[in-house]
Image 1: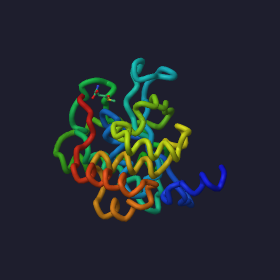
Image 2: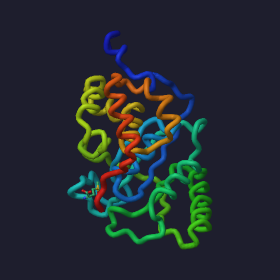
Image 3: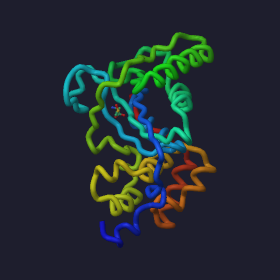
Image 4: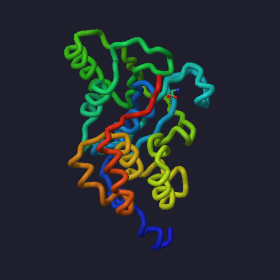
Length: 228
Ligand code: MHO
């Protein structure tokens, strides 16, 4: 990368992390959860895809028995897996049978520690909701990235904001891996805390007018856009 391009990289994407962990979670239509976690402090990147099925290389139109899933990389020194699971349980209805297999609630754990934390989180959610939790608990096996049009869904609906970030990240993979892009997608969807949003506003790589656009969306709190 030449120095000029390097200059445009959002400050949030220049941070480095001593260790990171992966979480793979399914909680219905994946557009909303990507925004929810994208706007969560300590989450470094988000992507949506398919997991939990038996076929290879599923696509949105050819899902077979796979489930819509969000995969996160996070900094465990800023947010714990247990805290992510608390968000997970608070932002969908884990007590309900899914309308379709594709919208099943599931936790794909990546380690014995994650399995343990998930079991505890299920017990806590059951106590809180006073109903059995339907969430499937399975070891992580594979995750197939969904089509580009599903990644950062909310951001793709707001062309002026999208254009600024795509100018910085021309390569779809770099775009998808950016913390700033994940945050903007979440904030546009009305997710996240106001305090963090204001602190991060200037480090997202956006011009002042577009920061104002983002603020207006954030304050409108119109979440997701999934019609299940
Ligand atoms: N067909 C629904 C859900 C999409 S989601 C990625 C909609 O268009 O809102 O399953």
